[in-house]
Length: 529
Ligand SMILES: Cc1cc2nc3c(=O)[nH]c(=O)nc-3n(C[C@H](O)[C@H](O)[C@H](O)COP(=O)(O)OP(=O)(O)OC[C@H]3O[C@@H](n4cnc5c(N)ncnc54)[C@H](O)[C@@H]3O)c2cc1C
Image (cartoon, rainbow, N blue to C red; front, side, top):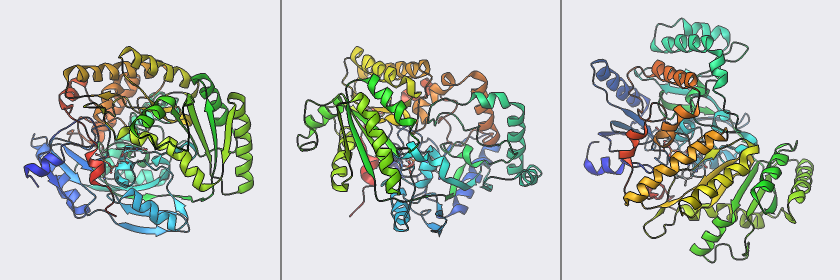
């Protein structure tokens, strides 16, 4: 499709950027993805580079699902569940399957995928894998990477590979292949073998990180080898996923919440560190600050009515336990209540599912903020998603408050306190030059703060165009060079989603800034019923 309406529609995702594609392809099957990719490769061999970008539902917040060349749009056709083993909890799907629908299916078999993006009603599983998405319960269960056991991927030259953890013997067979796949295995294995110390240095010591490529989980000490963890989180820069085999967890209906009101960032940090040490792990530890609640009450006076009243506490911390064993769950609840009692006069437990819904409304108030403008200023996904080591959580929050007060901007903070992974969305009007400049000032200072605190620019939403430019500063030089070499092995002509994640410069993204911002792609995917 090359019509200007379609190209215009696909020129945005849920990021602050815009880039118009030349062609939109709706693949009916894997063969169509192969043919398109092969066509791009053949042109590249003749010196003509056309970018190819895989796209799920386009809810990406980093500008990773837009591109100037060919956009391969999955959800219309490649959206089937291919195989489900409910007993083992294993499911094989096409990449364009809707995440929310898959979750409903799994829950009907008493299973669930814990790494659920908040956008799951609108987004695809392929997008979640390519972003290495995670959700509230990833505190206990981990991110998407932990649940992908294998992939089918179309490589840059149109060849299809299947990935899974390979034994030493299986790896040797791959190393002997005379295909592009064989070349990838050989080059990557040599690179990893020759740079073991560099690989170790690629670890960022935070509980979550989606910056860079995952080099640490490819080759294990026993010699086994798996491309899956590398491809998960690679944002379509190493290959186009067509199918995925996913693991799941038993679904527990019964949960308990422990809620605490805390007075300052120091107490929040200490409480979170103590909760992290619990042997009966909570599945989620979430936080919202008073500024978020004040803003929500301003937007909609009824939203928090009968749930929480002003003056709001500095922080509301919500700790969730989901162990299906009631005894273990209540043991966790008791311990968490004791811990939180050290830091707060106001701690309570909620076991009633209806009342729990009201408690979660407090946390989900962030969605209300994300969807409302202040005049012409929009809440922007700009300096969102930073993550720091737990013992730097208080410094992180204080630095954010300082930064916003310096810029005379309102700020609210919320997110995944258990992982020290926070969300912040400044209100800016991208139609105004002053605010556009402010946006990049905020970005620069925010990323310096994260670097200073030993954190990562992204815990869950990944890098895309927005944060890609900061990766070269985030990682040591030799590690970043190694990411470059990995990219080159998979994508020698640079056709796979260029300008995303790797080799991104601020100068290349500044002209892509939109003059207006909206969540239109979210609304397009709202369920019809
Ligand atoms: C309101 C809101 C809340 C969100 N909450 C969360 C959250 O809680 N956690 C979280 O992790 N994210 C969150 N996100 C970000 C995003 O929605 C998720 O990461 C989601 O999983 C992306 O899915 P998608 O289908 O929209 O992918 P897209 O936006 O279409 O694509 C995302 C990336 O994946 C690549 N890609 C897509 N399909 C393929 C494929 N088949 N093969 C190779 N690459 C592919 C794209 O090229 C792009 O780089 C949120 C976004 C919004 C707007």
